[in-house]
Amino acid sequence: MKKISGHLLGIDQGDIQIFADFETGGPMWVSEGSRERRAKVRFAEPFREPPIVHVSFSLLDMSTGPSIRADISSENVTRQGFDLMFRTWADSRVARINASWIAFGKIGDPDGWDDLL
Image (tube, rainbow, N blue to C red; front, side, top):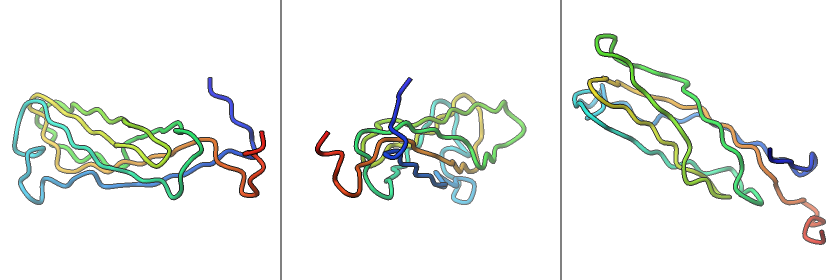
């Protein structure tokens, strides 16, 4: 468990479209096998240390014919941002994916008092 002082807790959030391959005939829609897409996310301002990041689907637009296989995660989390990663495999056909994210972490004291601790 990570414990953070209440007055130094920062929360940032957002929603991002990772791709829309249906419109362009891209590989997530027309290909098979292991595929992945990565989107870079930057926080509104840096955290004091890498935050905890939670990601989830806000839009999952997939073909109903094959099985739905999808994995979404955050990777390479830093003070400034992270990589949002989507993966699929086998014969899944993915038209488009949007993801929501929220980051919780320690921020600096705006008055600079935390530098004295």
